[in-house]
Every structure is written in C-alpha cells, then in structure tokens.
Image (cartoon, helix red, strand yellow):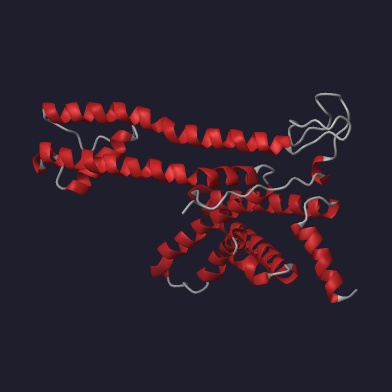
Length: 286
C-alpha cells in the first residue's frame, strides 16, 4: 500500500461521514468524547475523586492518547494540514489534548489552581461534537446572515445602557451605590436584560421611575435578536428545502431528511448521498 493510498483511506475514514467505516469512526469518537466528559465531571466531585482518583487519572491519560492520535492522523491525511490546524475544529481538537500535556509542566503544589483551570479547559472536547450535528452548517449560515443586524441591535443596546447608566449616576449618586458611570451601566445591563441581581437598587422616586422605564424597555428589546435569527433561519430552511428535488415529479419543498416525495410519493435520493449546494452569505456592501 502506497503512502498516497494510505492517506486517502485515512481521509475517507476520518473526514468522511457517508461510508460505513467513517460512520463507525464517528460513533467511536462520539462515545470517547462523552466518556471523557463524564470522567471530567465525576473527577470534579470530591466524593468520587477521593475514591477513584487513580482510575480517573488513568482514564484521562487513555483519552488524551486517543485524541492525540486522532489529531495527528487528521494532520497527516489532511490535504492542507496547516489549514486544518488553523481551522475552528483544528483548534478545538488541539485544546482537547493540550491541558493534559501542560499539566506536566506545573508539578509544584503552588500551581494547583492553574492545573485545575487546565483540567476545566478539557470541556472544549464537547465542541468537537458540533461536527456531528447534521444541521450545524445551517445554523452557522443563519448566524452569519444575521450578524450585521445583530451588530446593529447590540450597538443600539450599548447606547441605551450607556445613557441610562449615566442618567442613574446623576440621579442616584454614590450614596445610593451608583459610584461611577460604569457602575450605572452595569446596573442598566442587568436591568434591561431582566436579570436583576439586586446589588444596586435605585432609592429615589425619580430613579425608580427611570428603573421602571428600563425594565419595560428590556422586555421589548429581548425579542429583537430572537426574531432576527428566527427570520433568517426560516429563509435558510426554505432555501435548503427548495434544493431537494423529486426525481419523479421534479417538485421541491422537501425536508432534507425526507425519504419520499410529499407530492407524488416517489422515492427520493438517500439523504447521505444528496449533494446540496451551500449558499454563502454575500459580502457586506461598501
């Protein structure tokens, strides 16, 4: 077996999702990721850690070795290893194995806090599961299409919380907990998002009136980003469905995982074998 043939076979297994071998590899990887997360979660419970610390450490080393081999194989068989290493999933794959190796460089007891922080970083493994979500690309495209509208929305909210925060600083003053404008902005953020920690509360009647206005404004603001994303998601789903055509009646409008035509009842192509073009967001206008 030549090196190019080996690379191709590894590429089909590791990066491919439509072959039996690729599906088995994905299933094993999902089980390994979930198992490693369970070990990490149980290791954070003192009752379990005191009794099973040695076993948890052994399992952690095994999972780290498995993910290291997987990461190296991806670099080996990838057509552009540097591009993969710099990609989102490449960075996540690296973060999934890096903490265990970094912990070896902090053996002193005084650095135990840093080691614990590195152990928590292993939660990045769960982001590796994103690649197995069938409709994750649809959600990513929806967010990309909504980014300009969401940016405008957050800019408007930032202006509002700055105005309300400065106004409350002038009305209430340091004697009522509004010691600075940033402190007032903090109050405006937790109020307009309806969180309301209660650590900073207006005391004067005018301040309470402004607080009531801020709360009412918060309820109307919260629905805006949800509506933006929902509208874009609906458009993406309609565009995606329109690309799935029936070979019998040539009508569209089917769900991406549909097996039979909803118009004539004819059999559709296998969902795993459909080639659906990806619509990329248009560049922003100058």
